[in-house]
Each structure stands twice: as C-alpha cells, then as structure tokens.
Amino acid sequence: MLYHVRMDVRIPHDLDPGVRADTIAREKAYAQDLQRAGKWRHLWRITGEYANVSVFDVESHDELHEILSGLPLFPYMDVDVTPLAKHPSAIA
Ligand SMILES: O=C(O)CC1=CCC(=O)O1
Image (tube, rainbow, N blue to C red):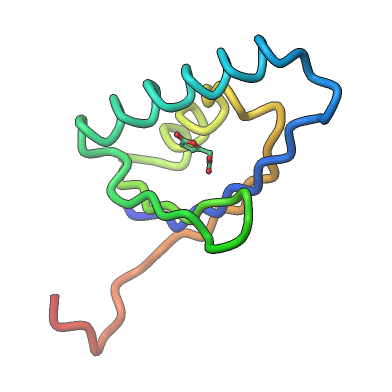
C-alpha cells in the first residue's frame, strides 16, 4: 500500500542544540534504514520549507503509523497522510 506523507518540522527554538543535533542524526539513520528496506520509497525536500514529501510502501495503516510514530523528530512534526490508489489512466 502506498501513502503520500507530508512532514512539516517544527523544532522548538529553545531546544538544547545537542539534543537537536542528536535527534536529527537519529532521524537520518532511521530514514536511511527504511529507504534501504524499501519502505520509504521517496523523500523530497519541499523547496524553501523545513518540510518534506515522502512516499511509503507498507503493508497497512498500522505499519505506517508505527513507522511515523517512531521517527525521532515525530514530537516536533506535523504529519499529513494521504493513502494512494491506482489511477485508471496510469501506465505504470
Ligand atoms: O528534514 C526533514 O524533512 C525531516 C526528515 C525526515 C527524514 C529525515 O532524515 O529528515
């Protein structure tokens, strides 16, 4: 099952710089593991924003929820999920 996910990152300005750097480093490792596993199919920066659009390929809503809620930056994100279905005119 494919999902379009938009993540807007809103790290508080007063967060300890060490905690900030550690959280971002853990986020990167977590995201790259999921990309290597084929679960996180696309990860794009939205130009000019601290936000991304991503496409996930997972088995269920529950699996996606588990992945998203496990993001180290999850406490500092607004997340918007859109389930994707096949378009009848798509050739791939
Ligand atoms: O910077 C972001 O958009 C948040 C994020 C998701 C995966 C990652 O490495 O950073």
